[in-house]
Image (cartoon, rainbow, N blue to C red; front, side):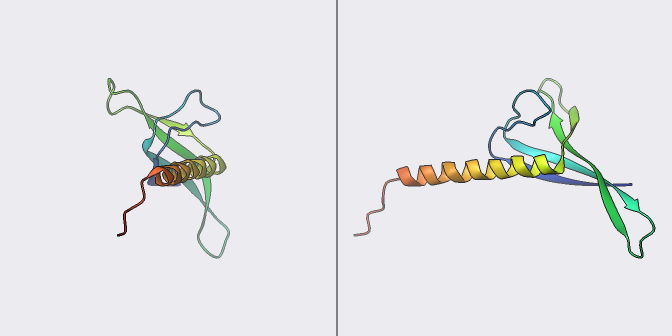
Length: 102
């Protein structure tokens, strides 16, 4: 077994299918667990679990919950977040005053 950690940033609040409520925008740690597949002529790993680390309230600093999430759902949620951010940026740009180029 091995684990890899990475961080993803959500610009908008988001929800996961199997959990109630929305999670706030911010940085979240992702933990991916893999196991070595034997019997191949080369080293190969199989992803066995993906977790999103969700922090608790400010009243309990240092505590976090590991929420299991499918790779497919994580990619979909990140994609929606990116699309929402892009739409908001385009809307804000459309409302900005034009520069005076004289």
